Amino acid sequence: MKAIFYTPMSLNYGGGCENWFSELSNILINKYNMQIDIIDTNFIPIKRWSDKEVKGKIKNVKHYRINEFVRNNILLPKVHNIKEIANIFKEYDLLYFNFSFIFQDILMYLVKRKVKKPMICGIHAPLFFENKIHNTYVKLITKRVLKKFDAIHVLNDKDKNIMKKWGIKKVYYIPSGSNTDDFKLKKFKKTSRLKFLFVGRLAEQKGVDILVEGIKRFLEENPEAKVEFNIVGSGEKRRLVEELAKNDKVNYLGFVDDIVKIYQNNDVLLAPSRQETFGLIITEANSCGLPVISSNIPGPNKLILNGKNGWFLKELNAKELANKIQYVYNKWRKDYKFIIKKGIYGRKFVENNFSVSNTAKGFNKMFKEVLKC
Image (cartoon, rainbow, N blue to C red; front, side):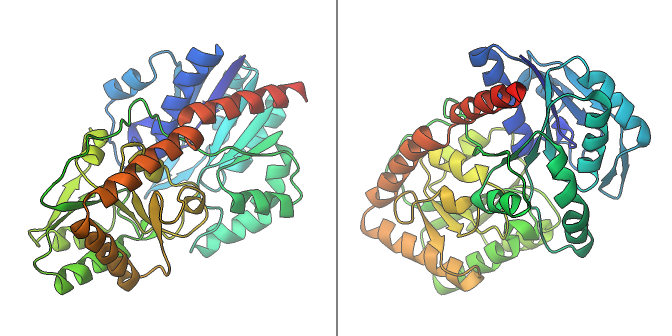
């Protein structure tokens, strides 16, 4: 089987989705004997991976790049991109594309009309969020265009239900997964401080304002607490984090290369996102043995068994986050093994349910079924 992935974000961006594509491709090649290649674009909001690093992550993958119109972090396809992608697609059995930006669905529909081969749309970003133009486009255009594809892949139940409501019949719910071989279980030991970690884009969607205010509130109420807060990421809310990091119990680490080492050097992940399609950092953290304090939203609500491998915030605000940090901290002070037990449970939970190997198994099945149609 020859399949090609298309993603509108450059692999050089080096985010969760890009890492997922590279890991999934390697497993489909090595375990299922597929030929998997990737098309990306020149859209690089932040370059986290060098060209050399990209090559290292997709050694057995042919990498195509197309140039779309990019201005002020807005991506718009060009007319000649249709022919460009179609000429590549002709050499493959099917194409899977990452729908994360408006207009990409129309682009790929026009490619499909030209090539007349199976195409699968993967929903890798929230379908709706606080942007009227985006939401109007999805309601008027995307709702209709998605019916033209051979299958839709979703990462959470909410999107699955939306697809069914829209009358789309061929929907595959296949969760993302972490590479448990790379994200190894940490070596647990008794420590003098409880270390909390945030990993992600420093944006409102990720709840960074809630994170900052929640940490600030906890530290104001517990100035002598034996804790450490480490924040990894980059984005528009960076100044908020840098201001918070003036407190000697808060460290802003920016973007880091060895994220596994960061996970293994911390104890609890904080994930107060407002919206997610899945929540890959939760499975990564659990895989390394970190329980997670998370918002109770579609995506993460399937990744956490409340009280076993993490805890849900009852309400998504700074006060509730501070209260949950307080709860976990108090438990740890009484018995440091409290965190270890949750971490071990989380590792087993990911191995059984949310490893990238399970994702690859689902993709193999999906690809075969779509090609039979």
